[in-house]
Amino acid sequence: MSGPEDDCRNSGDLEAEPSPGSISGKAESAEMDANIKRFSAEPRAGVTRTQVIDRGGEGTRAVHGGERQKGGLKARATLDALATPIVQTATFTFRNTAEIIGYNEGTYDSFEYGRYGNPTVRAAEEKIMALEQAEDCLVSASGMNAVTTMLLALVEANGHVISTTDCYRRTRQFVTTILPKMGVRLTVIDPADTDELERILKTEGGTLFFSEQITNPLCRIIDTERIGALCKQYNCISCIDTTFATPVNHRPCTLGCDLVLSSGTKYLAGHNDVMCGALAGKKEYIDKVRKLHGVLGGVCDPHAAYLLIRGLKTLSLRVHQQNANAQAMAEFLDKHPAIVKVHYPSLPHHRDHAVAMRKSMFAKGFGGVLSFEIKGDGNPWSQETFDATARFIDALEIPYIGPSLGGVETLIEQVRVIGYYDQPLEVRQRLSITNGLVRYACGIEDAADLIADVAQVVDMSLSVCVRLCRAGPPASLACLVAGSLVLGGAWSLAAWYCCEAVTDSSPDCDAILVSRAGA
Ligand SMILES: Cc1ncc(COP(=O)(O)O)c(C=O)c1O
Image (cartoon, rainbow, N blue to C red; front, side, top):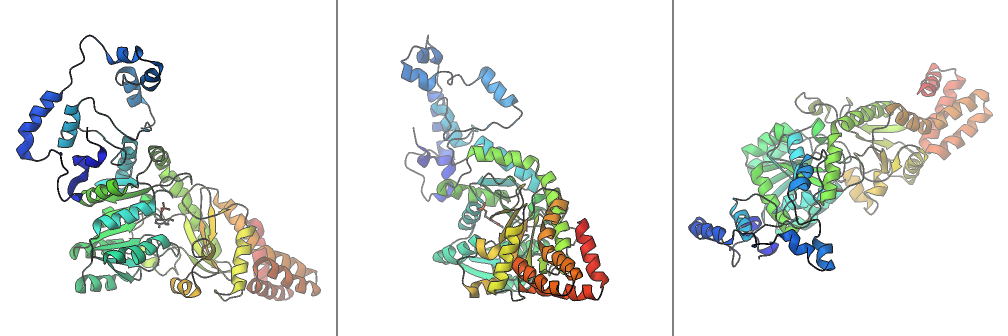
């Protein structure tokens, strides 16, 4: 019996020559029919398999007892189970040689070996196909596994990848350090610059365009529709990572793009308890990627696939709540003096707001992630701004501090510390990863609680100061000290300003106090 490494059904065009001993091609079909007839197993006369096992030693009974009769009640109940069964197996078996020959010939449909596919994983793939409105889908071990396998499968040696400036750091690392070893050229453009994309495709051509929608961590927007149309016109594969947007909000396959990719670890599975990735889109490309995936081996475990399926059932509910939470948080922070800038596409000052608001682009909202810049001392690269940002994060009560996003729990990170700790200043400056940049990934908690939690930190020094100021001028000094301790120099300056305003009985300060007290 041939092992999986000799399998002719799954090796496909990755093998230059048919493997020795494999049987393929129309010319041999007569031989094949004869083989199928020859090897179709007849039951051994007079004895059933169960009897053979029951009469065996305890070792044989321990290994095979209760499991060799696969039909009947157990099979039917497995099919009737409401939840998709976790088919926890590394290998699939065949009742006789005729079946495996039929499998190799494509006339008998089954699975053979876990690296090439599994029914639980396939159920997850079909659910994602339905959500993305895509022809096919491949689920794998992680989002990065999906990214790397997709790029290796679809970009030939000396190909040309076009990508965008803001993107997940490990993706950038792969395209800038690994693909060049295969002679692959990389061109990086601004996410909004589709004119530049057109110029590049026209003058230099491109093998594959890859970007994110919405980008990580600065929440930029790409014009998926124009990118899809341009790539089609110039024969370049388009693949969009919609980890941030989710298929609830944005579906590139319906907007003219070839492929959509996602870190299923995030919103799709949704509970911060499983790693997986998904690539969906045109079948001809998924077929190619699946073949290489069977060789590279970054498969999704059946149990992880089950968790993914379970998470996907509530994707829509969760994402609606996360959209609403992020929108409310973005609006709250956008008005706050301690925050320099909020990056969230629905805000009118967002760089890509006009494209983001186009009706065809985002169906329900902009996802649960927003990023924003803490003011600190006003210098985004200073130690003081770094410290003020760390103090802000550490003072929050609801979010967990940690990487990732898209789960039911809110997560927060100082991007400089979690994703870019080892990166020198010039790299961070080029990528706009300031010391004050915070990524806030909303969970499904109540928006009012998340906002009150943030408000109690950003307003703490302000409200303390205003009350102190009301007590008399000497307290203004205490206000400065309190402000510095909590949020840093710029914030204490804001508080000082407010003290001055209180002295002048400014209605602004009263308004701040009243609105925050009610928040
Ligand atoms: C946009 C984006 N794509 C891909 C990935 C990689 O996914 P994973 O962590 O599942 O490998 C991440 C991870 O954070 C991400 O944010």
